[in-house]
Amino acid sequence: MQFGERIKELRESQGLLQRQLAASLEIDTPMFSKIERGDRRAKREQVLKLAQLLNTDEEELLTIWLAEQVYQLVENEAQALQALKIAQHDINQANTK
Image (tube, rainbow, N blue to C red; front, side, top):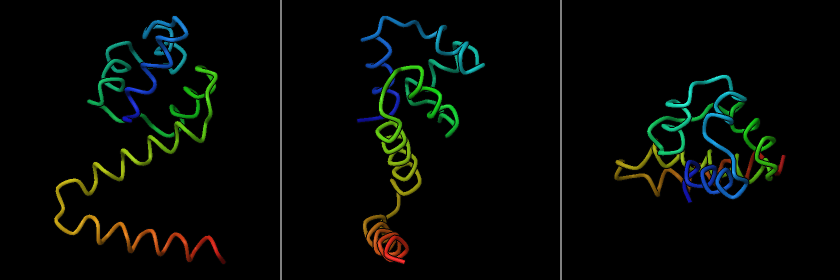
């Protein structure tokens, strides 16, 4: 699931308008709309604020947001899967220290 799709789903389920969340994030409504459509990336601090505003799990939103960023970075690279495996290994090594 894409980040924008998830925040749209949460926003609509709570009956909130884009302009309400945009105002809380101190951005304009068209920019928020672009984030929902995936045309613009949210900043990390915006993701944290959205989790709070949407009463949802911060870790879930951060994970979706980060996965989307990683995908956008490697989507057109032939060696993407190999690079991700190396990155996963490095992350596992760092987490065991």
